[in-house]
Length: 238
Image (cartoon, rainbow, N blue to C red):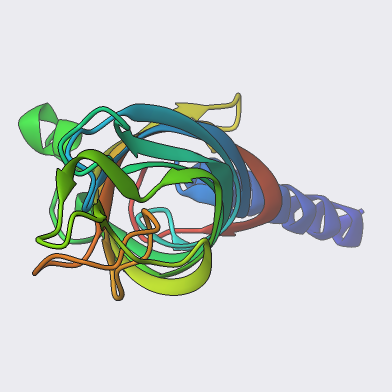
């Protein structure tokens, strides 16, 4: 009888300890991997005289070292466009581009104490991000010749460049990640809204190789991220 009592007591204590530990993990757990899908509104600031807005789509794989320190591998595809054949230089381009991007992303929650709620809790999902990108440019349409400007010998003004090129660029991004939690208080779905400027390291994003500054393009993007698994724990509640 005494042995049965001891076994029952030990079992009860063990079960209670497991329950306490499990309960303590609620609000601390997160998935280490996300799959992201989204799109962006793009504008190129290059050598063409006018700027146009275009769309692109993206798919990403995210590794979350912590809920607030993330590494993103992203594949983009879409169109970049700008200029006008009726402008003074005649420069117009339509670039069907593909880009591969790697970014590190640091959210404020990794650095600040948000346990008291309020403004700090609202700021914890604000982030900055940078890394490196590789873009493949393919001009589907381009005009290099002006219909109005001419050289001294009477030939039309012409802007040189490449119809196809591969280039490195540096992305600089700021954004906010809205986290949505499941019944276990784990972030299972995220909405990422960001503004990004990409600094081209050469000068053929728009197909024109001219001017004193290199090309750059901006992106306003929305990405939906879905937790894939690899659940682990964080040192603070989320």
